[in-house]
Image (cartoon, rainbow, N blue to C red; front, top):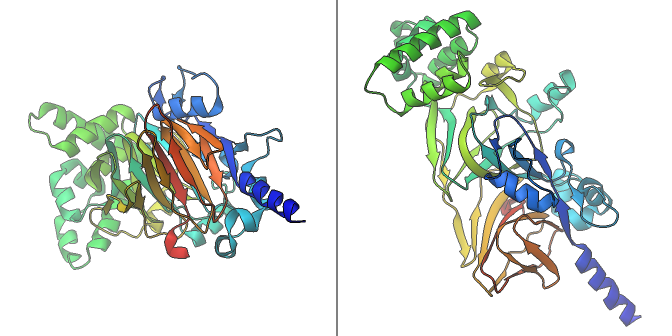
Length: 413
């Protein structure tokens, strides 16, 4: 009886770490060729050559139906069904009670060659309504707060600038497009959110021909000027990627940020943003809901976007991570669904990972090693770990190892 019990415990332990074959998305804004993180990690993970002529935009790790992950075993089971059939063990009691029978987060790697759309993600209430009304555009009923951790220098537009009036003063074409007089802005000076909503809505809902005229005037003026600041340079760059698009004007309305490797920024629901250039690791609630209004060939929902935004002003908070121990840095945004850890281990060393009461997804950024002596991992390996899993990371004798680990935010437990 005792022997049988011991054997069962060992089997459970082994079964609680599974390796995943992940999904790659080839959106047209991705980096073409074999130099991107998505191309390299995806090729190693999927054990297939890189399609050098294709853009590699995103690598998805999780249970979302638009990028299904498969367990690397004889059964080739989808991670989603594996989790659903072992929900309490895989997710842990608290996580299951709080989020249901699914992994509440999605981990991605992004390789960005040109700007993504001016977009925001709906809150839960709006997501449910949009999914019901337009299921072809909004594939699920979940909200999608998210966080991006820079792997290279990473450029983005995020949130509104703090002085809407200054944007109009700086850019005469923006003023002409909106038709807003400065007296109108002065009358609203006590409520800058209302100012920004007024300006942004006028810009985004302007007639396409008028937008094209003003963007062309702006580009002509900027090209003739010797002195250009970084917003002007950005406007020119966006126009080169998406000629005559209303999103070009957003260079003057949204905060332009450049994250250095190891810095992260988070986006709550109903906050406008657009990734511009570089590579990042992104973690979010399990959703693919995006409301778009510029810099995109995809369908736009401009009125919904203008209406849903909070119009919170000012620069976004940049996270640099909290040091948990000598091997672990943790990035914790103010969202329950997720946080991200970076775990590093020097050559021939070991690291005891923090124990999470919820599930984890681990991606090997570089190096080779083992988890718990029996799960061999290398660059591109992706591992799903059940809740409460005790994990020891050991690097190989060839060099150190570095891992990204997405997990439920520890504040939930």
